Length: 87
Image (cartoon, rainbow, N blue to C red; front, side):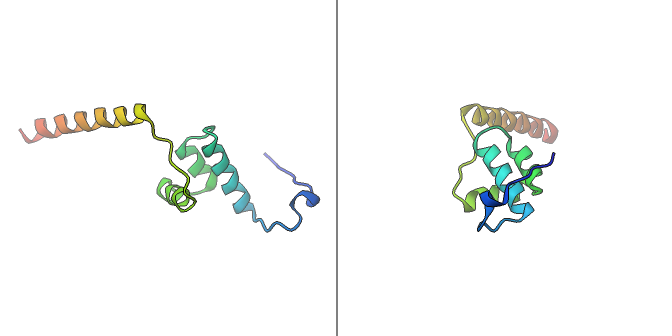
């Protein structure tokens, strides 16, 4: 994909290509059109680095009750596996 921005629209704004791509990734994440992983990949960052960038900008991560329930289920499965393995 190629994106062209008319000079008058960006005149006086200091932007690098990396800045534009990061801002696009951030916007897509905030609008819930990209997952954390997708946004991080688009920005060319690791998930932890992208999370740090979100935190630095005070942007909350998307984490709802369904995510919490999924995490609890995973922890329960891992605990059961660990208990079985250690006997």
